[in-house]
Length: 126
Image 1 (cartoon, rainbow, N blue to C red):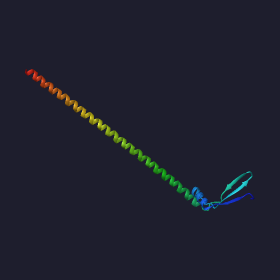
Image 2: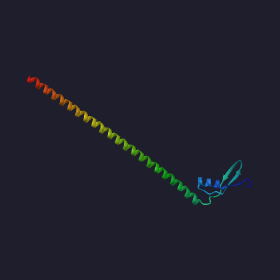
Image 3: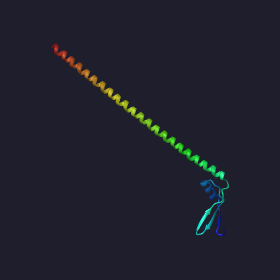
Image 4: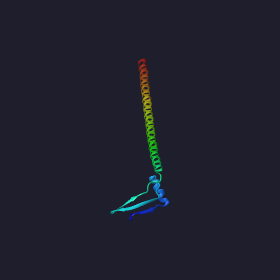
């Protein structure tokens, strides 16, 4: 393979690749087949580490998604509770106003009736 090139990676490059893929790669090989170059990497030094890293990443994503879902449900529940309290409070206020209005109306009618009765009695006695 006369057109093969091996590129040694720096520690920084290795770290970036390890973080992104979970694989530990000491070098990258580039070969030319016909007119298009092909890039390959040596076998991972520890496929077990890569598998564990992948599982950990998936677990972390699942945990974040679960926390987000719980947070969303809690927020919706809190909004619903506040809305319910506001609705109850509004109904209570309206009911209280209606009761006061009704009492005032009855009181006014009773007062007018009492005054009319007194006036009528006074007129009759004359």
